[in-house]
Image (tube, rainbow, N blue to C red; front, side, top):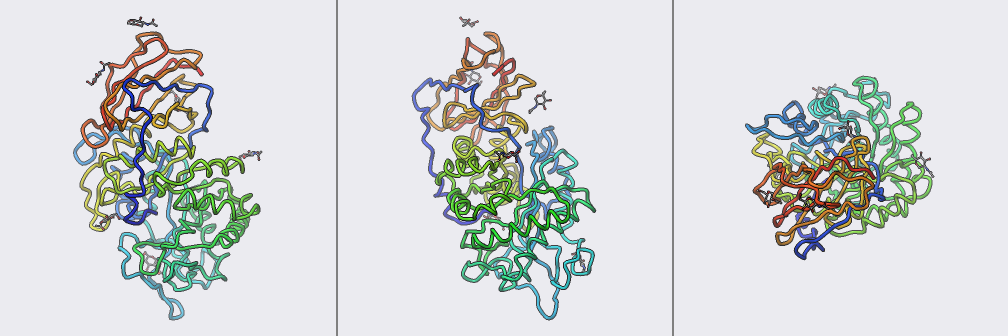
Length: 480
Ligand SMILES: *[C@@H]1O[C@H](CO)[C@@H](O)[C@H](O)[C@H]1NC(C)=O
Ligand SMILES: *[C@@H]1O[C@H](CO)[C@@H](O)[C@H](O)[C@H]1NC(C)=O
Ligand SMILES: *[C@@H]1O[C@H](CO)[C@@H](O)[C@H](O)[C@H]1NC(C)=O
Ligand SMILES: *[C@@H]1O[C@H](CO)[C@@H](O)[C@H](O)[C@H]1NC(C)=O
Ligand SMILES: *[C@@H]1O[C@H](CO)[C@@H](O)[C@H](O)[C@H]1NC(C)=O
Ligand SMILES: *[C@@H]1O[C@H](CO)[C@@H](O)[C@H](O)[C@H]1NC(C)=O
């Protein structure tokens, strides 16, 4: 989950090697940087507020054009949705009840299903399956529109499993789950996954029982749900979770640990132990280290352990899309994730793709960041092979059955031509063939405008990039 004011500063401005006028980048037909799993968003807060709105699910989970706030908006085509199992409930039991942070916003309080510790049986009155209807509705709308990869995640164990009964964290940011409830947290996740499958026909592909567990900023006076877990505790919970998924005959895989920073994820993987690693199928990491951190080390560790890797939560407060495009291209260059998930599609303060008030429910506009992201999500599609674009600021993807090459490139420097060299491909379109091109000006101006004046010239094509633009190209008739 996103956090802290210093984030904007943590994003180091990336200096492009594409500084000289008229530079050339060579797309490598031989490279293979993984098969793309897809793009998505976490549900949680925005879905609690806006989960009933199908205009939102249309623009987020389809590639169709639809009407939104009086304009025709091309959909982002997300296929990943992350559902947040809440940690709160308003009941009392045996004289005990949840302790609420003085600073938590109502929009960030997520209702959980296991409302007291009397029974692990999900059909008993210790479980309330009617809570959290709007977030479930948002999930249903997403699946109905073609979302195929559904993940379950937790920000904190249920309040009554927490040492201080406060699902925002411990007063000092230390581990807040009671030692005798480690298995119960796993049972909570497994019972939720089972109930969704049996009652609501929702198959969670993956479950992550933690959220930024190494962080020390999950505090009793925090503004959202959160819980620190020590690494040894994570290993124990992962063991229980595999057991309880298996005993319920769920093939749901375990993803872990949704650390905030690339470097924290490295540390967790290096210390969690081989037993836990054998039970983790995918490494999930968040993108809040911005322009810093060893993305490359995390990729090396994950691939050496034969794990796929997602940036399962990226968010920033820069509504222009500049931070997003810089960090996304760094991810493609060094992290090599096969999935990429934005945190809150709707939020305030520049955090949303769509600007909206977290608590009042007012939706005020489409941030430029939406259009910047569309340049990627509408073209780099699930199942495509990711290729090396030959430059820090270029990513390429290939659809073999359509013989289609997609190239997305950004220019942060002075306006210049960028030449894209396709000479490594065995077949290319004939000289003069038109190439589809879309352009977005990162800080305003063009919003995903399509142009048709780009053509193949020999083994290359070229395009003029204004400062701070991102362009997407689709080239057909290309064979690796
Ligand atoms: C279950 O949750 C619903 C929705 O929040 C609430 O109205 C109801 O009172 C809860 N049931 C019990 C038994 O607490
Ligand atoms: C790597 O993981 C994949 C998918 O889980 C599995 O099919 C394959 O056997 C694994 N390979 C090795 C060498 O462990
Ligand atoms: C919504 O969240 C953003 C980011 O944390 C914050 O800047 C903004 O003030 C919040 N808005 C409301 C109305 O709470
Ligand atoms: C490749 O393109 C074909 C034809 O447009 C489409 O049906 C298919 O889904 C695409 N595959 C991928 C992996 O994008
Ligand atoms: C294509 O059109 C854009 C926008 O009108 C213009 O800036 C660019 O110079 C044109 N490129 C060529 C090669 O004509
Ligand atoms: C491609 O076509 C252009 C203009 O039609 C021509 O000037 C150029 O020589 C051609 N290049 C090759 C490699 O055939």
